[in-house]
Figure 1 (spheres, rainbow, N blue to C red):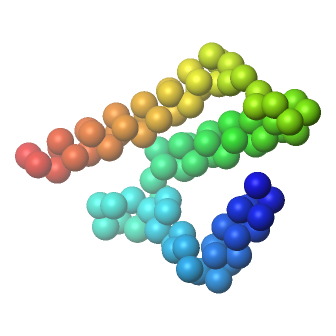
Figure 2 (figure 1 turned 90 degrees about the vertical axis):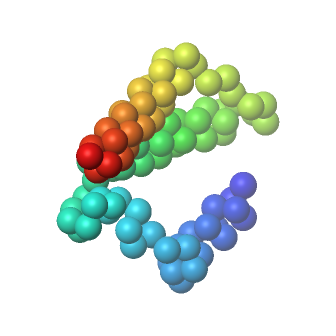
Length: 92
């Protein structure tokens, strides 16, 4: 797992993985997309909690609580709803 994290970090730092427009709006306004930002932050926070739990689980995979699944589902739902609305709105 540490090797995978190191490889990802290396590729991000050397720009082989392009992150320049990760949070950008796709409508050409060059602003930061709040729904993308919240999805990224929630994903990172939940992943960090899972890794912390895995470290303390003595080699076993930890259970994912229904509360965490609900938070991730809500965060993904916000992103998907805004994406669907902006796609639908742009077709008018």
